[in-house]
Length: 490
Image 1 (cartoon, one colour):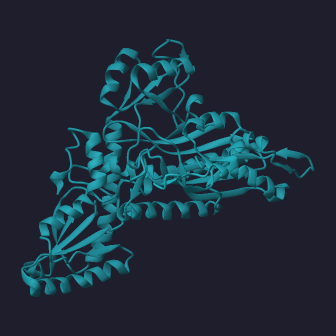
Image 2: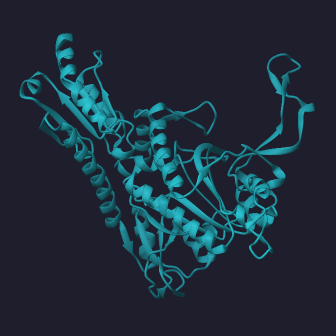
Image 3: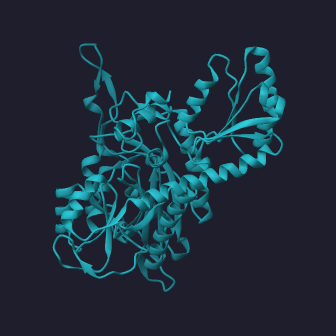
């Protein structure tokens, strides 16, 4: 089975596409640019949802749901916002079909034209702030801390499963605050939540920083992000948190009576991550044998495989493995017993390697006689004979070790592929091999655009934890107060 995917070093893009399909995560649908997320892929998304949802609720947020359709007039109320999304919007103009005059199909009923066209949700700021106007009257109504799990549509011309599709799943938080300071603190808090999730659950080292004005979310005063490095040296934006100021409150006239009795506009934020995180998991950790999943997000953490000849032996070995299954499940570990009798054990091994199951436990008659099992870990492909006695505690510790090892490997890779460069000529040469580049930039959009046009690299973020370092822009030689991170990106 492992030979069915292209070698990662030969063609990274094709390797990724092969892996998504062969690991049974997703497939292209009949609708151009849209995907079918298969049960195994959706199980990963459910794990992501579950962990993030708890983190949101632990920080005081609640879930709600807002309409899929947005009146077109709402988008025109915030100029930067509509400009940012205008080219990606799908528009509903009619509400009914009819049989075609020739009787060979259906056509749009011309009498069913909508009074106002509707936009299929590309993001929900406008519909939500129109709603918040009815919710917020006084400072006592603040803060409003809402999140929604939903789908969105952005009409993409070039799509790739999980990374960029016309329709995708995500969560979007939208909060309202009485003061600028509270909103800015919320923006920072949520990007930190995303960073913690990426590091602790995805085993993905990320950098936190601000986007440049040209890379900010449409309508935001500031956008904070987390950036991760994939194994081909490209960056992937894994989450964003936006300080929206009072832009949407002014656009939708959302005011509140302050403690002093004055009418003031509300301050706001929005923040989100999407099914793109599954693409990040794949590209950051996996290998030529298939997926490598961090145990915390693996739908199955352990698979049990009986080694046998004949049905009698299968029954005996399965019975031998059952107590292990029960002991692991009692500790909250997700386990599958693969006792299929129509495929060989070698096929099973390859299949579960492809699907990235962190731990595989196999046993045959000899293991049964010795009171042992063979334990294989997916991250290193190492195997070890382990006594059945205490196997549950052994596996718990092994899963912790695998989670840490996957993170450490990704962190070492990022550090080895992060470079400090001062010469633009050197930058143009080295960017071809990928990596993160710490460079000085003069702060102008003209220089930023020039670098993008000439190298296809963008400023991924202005790191928040970087120390000030006076220098000169690598392109113009003008003064620069600190280095920023350049990379090519997905």
